[in-house]
Image 1 (spheres, rainbow, N blue to C red):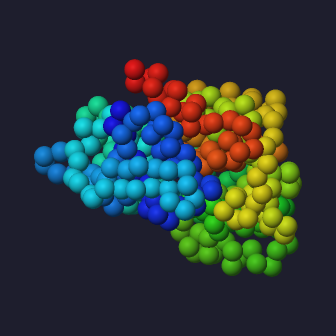
Image 2: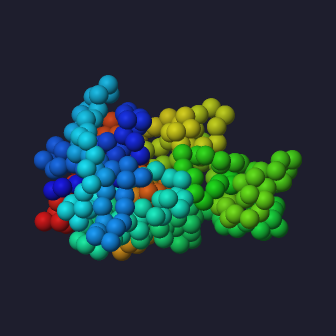
Length: 313
């Protein structure tokens, strides 16, 4: 197949952790042709939908992991499959790229994940569809609603709706003298909605990442243990990864969420679970492929391409 990938500059990725590189290495090992595109390279014209692409060779070498050709204008309809792996923030430019990819999809190209679902499924708000799986939560910008939630639950976590990697996540308790300034800043003076959740003490045991491929979970999880003195269970924030088994509750959450993921064409998804609660559903560019391989001996990229090759056969 001819496989395109939209991703942030490959020369700046973290070789040890990057899941997009794992996808590319697996695709190449199966004989597929790779076409690399940065987020700024997608365009629509009266003559079609195009990308400024570079053919690519990838290598499992921490000092030299890719080679690319000169850029060429390519009709996206000539590709069989495009991976959308642009990292958040989920802003206007991200949305515009989903419009371009949706037009490519209409011309017969399979896009993973489905562009319209990337637009519709905010990673924090999407989880709220599964209320029975979640800790008490609030999505709001109204000052009184936010203060009431903190007073009711005493110990909370607040986070922006469009971030990644643990950026701008705060633990806020009802006696915290900084409540007002935290809320003012994170809501842009109570104009922008945020996510607020009751604090889950089990974060000390790790924020579990469960990768799902076409609605089916890998048979293990990556627990990301916060660094000493840290709230955030994000590898980007210094957390430590270890393997863990799926609990009955984890499997129950996966069973609840999986059918919706299939319905929406969300092929690569990362569920985040703390204790017994689903906290986020990551759909933009879920990570931890390498951690699964190194810690659980599970090759997520191989599972992914088994699904792709069977579904496109």
